[in-house]
Image (cartoon, rainbow, N blue to C red; front, side, top):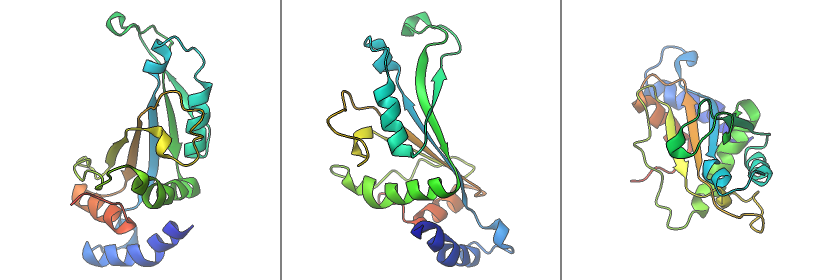
Length: 179
């Protein structure tokens, strides 16, 4: 629980001073992390059993993912209503900090030719979105089971006022942004 302790003891006082916050409750924090994985291409190849991807995603997130289904049919994409199109997990609290610490310190530095993550992924509310090209970079995923690599979208929801506050929060938490 190193990252949460660091946030409480070091980051909150520093951010309160640098952002000129009147109250500790004004200091931005991370509310939740949402992980999404599209499985449409996996289903289109004829595989109806996506339990391998579901198990990999559960190992990555530390909890079981929920399956997202298509709401309506789109013939150009060969999509029928009710077909599974994605997996999603929302992390909060303890699991969120464990995942963040693992992502920052272990997973991202393992990426080949890693030069940092893009700092332009912030929206106007201070939330951050980025994409990992291969889900197999996580240590929990057994490399023998990987049939096809799938991308993973990671959304970090913060309580920041704007993108500058959000960027400052994630920088202090140790996110390796590109120069």
